[in-house]
Image (cartoon, rainbow, N blue to C red; front, side):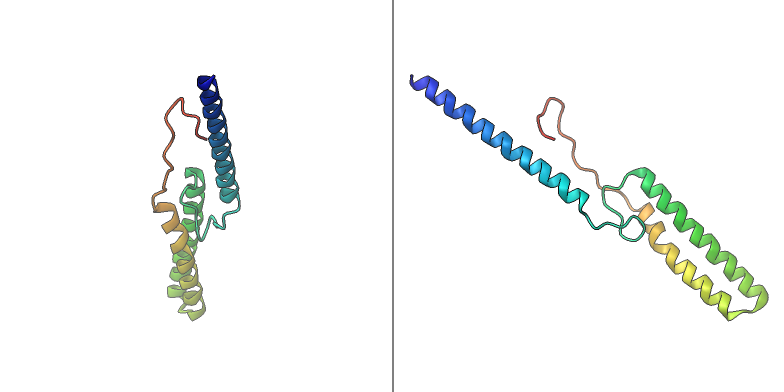
Length: 116
């Protein structure tokens, strides 16, 4: 009789712990969904590689536009083109930096683990 009550208490405790773990995993997913990361200016540490490549392409586009405007400004001696080129070059710095900085991956649970 004592053995069955201990077993019952143990299984009840295991079910309670598993329910708490599921609630914590769900809360973690909801926090990820509601994050305030902007893919171009403030990229997520766990951003996928495709997103980083896209941000890098956008940054390189602004860099190219800035360099072209700067060259046109040199030919025409135009201060407006110099100013626009500096603006485009400054905009290109942050997306390129975000694309090149490393991503932080979360540790994956071992196979057979019940963690989500």
